[in-house]
Amino acid sequence: MMNNTPKFFCLSLTVLALTACTSENDTTNATKTTQPEPHEVIDVVSDENKKGDTKLPQTPKDKKLMVLHYESVDQMSTMAIQTTRVGIPQPMPPIIIEPPTSSSDRDNYLPTPSNGVFQTSVSPLSTFSVDVDTGSYANVRSYLKMGKKPPKDAVREEAFINYFDYQYPAPSNKKQPFSLYTEVAPAPWHADRQLLRLTLKGYDIPANERKPSNLVFLIDVSGSMNEANKLPLLTQSLTLMVNQLSEEDFVSIVTYAGATRLALEPTSAKNKTKILNTLKSLKAAGSTNGEGGIQLAYQQALDAKIKNGVNRVILATDGDFNVGTTNIDALKSIIEEKRKQGISLTTLGFGRGNYNDAMMEQLADIGDGNHAYIDTLHEAQKVLQRQLSGTVQSIASDVKIQIEFNPATVKEYRLIGYTNRLLKDEDFNNDAVDAGEIGAGHVVTALYEMTLAGKAGQIDDLKYQQTKQSKENNGELLEVKVRYKLPGESTSKLVKTQVTPDQITQSFDKASDDFRFASAVAAFAQKLKANQYLTTMNYTEIADIARKSRGEDPFNYRGEFVSLVELAPTL
Image (cartoon, rainbow, N blue to C red):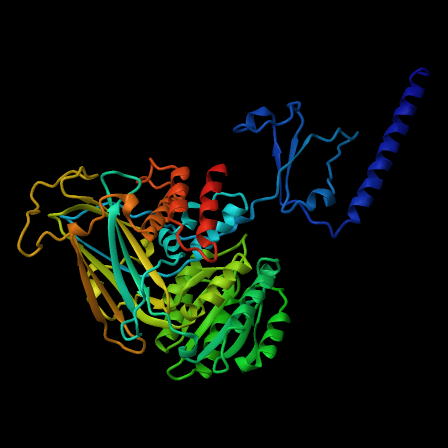
C-alpha cells in the first residue's frame, strides 16, 4: 500500500496541473468575444465519410476529425478553437482548414436553357421581343477574370451578341427609328447549317438633340454594398454620367437601406457640384428595403415629371432586397403601373456574392429599360458615358420581331438566345402586349441557325405536311417583320423584308467581319453554356475567328473578347 501512495499523489498533482492549464485557456478564450465564430463545424468519423479525391489525415476510429469552414481568410488567424475535455484532456484531433466559401454561390440567376430546334413545316413562325441588355456579358467577364467558370444560367447569348457594336449605317432621321439588315452565310460550327443574322441599327441622337431628362438615382446604401466593387464603384460610375448631362437635365437621389431617404431633391445638372457632393457623401450600412426605395423613387419621378421629356429611375444595387416587399411579382406590379404613367426603369448591377441578376433583368424588362452590369470603371464609361443617349432616351418601344420561314426552302431553324423574351405568335399584332425598347444608337442583333431543304436535319421528316414550292412563297427563304411604336404613340408601325437564296454568302470566310465576329461571340456563349448543338467547335477555333474579324475596335472591346475566349479553357 505504501508503495502505491507516491504514484497516486503524483497522478493527482498531474490532473490538478492540467485542470489549471485548462481553466486558464478557457478564461483566455472567453475574453475573445469579438472574434467571429466558425460558419460550420462538421465532425467526420473514420475514413468512411471521405468522398471524391479529398485526402484526409488518418485518424483513429475512436477520435473525431474537425473540419472548420471559414467565411473569410482573416478568420483563419483569429479563430479560437475550443475542445471538449472529459477527465484527462485528449490530444486535439487533426484540423482541416477549408478555403473561404465562394461568394458567387449566393448569386441568383433565372434558368436560361438554350432554345431547341423547330421544324418549319410544323412551326413556321418565330416571335420574340427585342432585348438590348448587356449585363450578362459583363457579369460573365467578371467571373472569368476572377479565374472562375460562370454558372450556365449567367450566360444569355443575346446579351453577349448585343454587347458589341456593328458597323451598319444608321437611319438619317428619327422618324424612321432604325434600319433593318440581314445577312446569311454558313455556320462556322456545322457545314450543313446556315446562319441568319438580323440586325436593327437605331438612330443615334446627337447630344444637343436629346430631350431634357428627369432622372432619379435610386441607390442601394445597405451593408451589403460596403465593398470596393459596389458603392465606391457605383458613385464613380454615376459621376461619369452626371458629367455628361446638360443644364436642362435634372437629377434626384433616393437612397435605401433599412429605411429610405431623399438625399437630393431635383437639382439641375448645371449645379453638378451639389449632385457630385451628395454622391460622395453616401455610406453603406444596414439592411435592404428595396421596395420602399422603389416606391419613393417613383413618387419623386412623378412629382418632377417633365412633359415630353425623359423620365427615368436608375436603380443601382447588388439586388439584395431583404426588407419590405421582396416578392418579384409584387415589385414587377409596382414597376408596370409606373411605366404606364410614363416612368421607365434602368437597372445597374454591382458586385459579387449576393448579386440578384434574376431580379435586375426582370425589373428592367418590365420597366421598359435596359440592364447593365458594372464591374469596372471602363464598363461604366461604355454604358453611362459613351452610350448615354441610348441608356437614357428611347427611340422605339414595344419592338417585336416575327420571322416566317418557308418550309419549301428552310427545313429547320433555331433561335440563339432570347429564351426569356419569346412571345406567342398572336402577340405580334397585339399592341396591348408589352415588348422591349430600343435606345438611341442601340444595335439589336439576332442569330438563327437554319438547315436548308435538301440537307440532313435533326428531326425526322414529316409524312403528311405540304412543303412544295408555290407561287406565293416564290422561292424565298423567309420573311422578317418588325413592329414598333414611336415614343408617345400607342399604335404600332410595321416594316418587313424578305430573304432569298441568292442572298446567301457561300463561304463563311467571305462573310462580313461583323457577321463572323458575331458568330464567334454566339459560339463562345453557347460553349460556356455547354450547348448540345455546339459540340465540335473548340475555344481555339472561336478565338481565331474573332481575332481575324476584329475590324475597327477603338475601345478594345473586341480585343478583350479574344483574351476571354483564350482564358476560358484554362479555368
